[in-house]
Amino acid sequence: MTVKRITANLNTRSVSEMRSFYNALFGLDVLMDHGWMATLGTRSDAPVQLSIATEGGEGTPVPEISIEVDDLDEVLAKARALEHDILYGPETESWGVRRFMLHDPSDNLINVLMHI
Image (cartoon, rainbow, N blue to C red; front, side):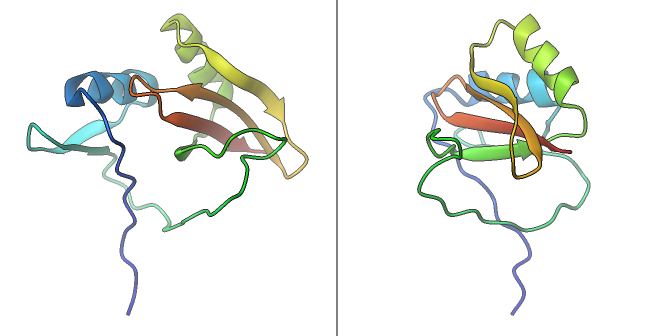
């Protein structure tokens, strides 16, 4: 048996608000939309990973989702331009990532990171 995909399912009051947030900040496209649920992403394959944690590192809470990007400064600038509150960071962590954290419109904690 091979795991082909793991999908994060985030609870929300407004699919359209969340769709707009993830599109504006991360450029994710709508891959499927049933009205009550939308799947966002890219057309490229990505590795399957599942993280299990007691904390988010450096004493931070465990985020609901981590999003790895290739240019953290670009996403951080975009988040600030969109007037999102940055709750943590940007910080360079001892385990080899640079990251920041923010909430999405449904209050899910998002860990945005770049390996260094």
